[in-house]
View 1 (cartoon, rainbow, N blue to C red):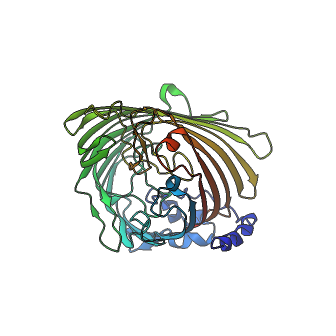
View 2 (tube, one colour):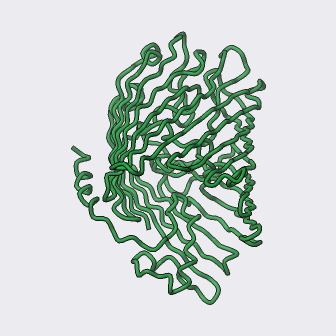
Length: 461
């Protein structure tokens, strides 16, 4: 079997590396990492990775180098319930994301990152999210001014990866082989407790082949996003308030296609205290589509509790979502939510169902087995919110039309994920997902049970 060699790397997971002295966390978008503390020789630990993280260039500049290398194998059986271009398919995905950052006197920096991808997949199902060749993923200039102790301003312009809040609407699309980036400008104002971000951007349109990705001329977005830390003096909590505007001259929904202008108002409350963590968000959208009005919404909740004093530190979780769908395909008014640029695997490992016209329950259990090992299991239940709207994929594509079916239940999914973090740089993961179709899928076409396997090795520097 093609995926068997991947299992050979898993025994290394019990060999954990020595912990380094408080380095910054490695984020998917990388430009948030700050290694300036290495300017002080006393802060060096002798770890091998420190060598390329703060290199003096002349007297006033410093260079930081880094990279990510990921190899992934995925296998679908009966993808899209048997309706996919190639329902039974196994394929390899490879990507390398090298980056370089040059800082000038800590006030100005230039950040560049390449996206080198390769997919060994059948041409009938391969898309630019799988393989976009060699491209510029990020390339921007940033300047900052003000005082971190009072208020600091940051202005960034160019191509960049963006992720806001819980990534329900704006995400880096990190799980896919090709990350999502935007061309635009970003202005941030940050004080000790309040951060406000303003931006204008167009998504980058990925294409098969190298050096041909370009700014999407059909879609543009701008917005304001504010985060208040410790509201009402409550430690380890926060509140987000935001407004997002999106226009698209080529939008498509169950009732047809046309130009779309959509505005989003949102509020998010999150925190982590006494073993509990929570993330609640309410989203309301309004605007117009093909000359008619838009009214849509999303209520989302993610609550978890961690038993720190129990063996394996079990963590119980429950996600729940209710997302509006269209009420009448013959009425030009639209109630289907637009998830903008959402996180692809928010509803599970298989990544079949997207956040439109959906009611969802998602209980989960995660165990920390020690020596870097973890295992998590989840059950995901899906219903249609509106019986007059269809089912959508993670990219906003329509998987099934509503047709004449009055059935609400879409299906049941089970996920099992085993992961191992060998060190700060190296990790492995094995995932299995099964999706059993419900009454609506059986009413509207093929309804084969979907099986998904994902194997991943990830190294980051």
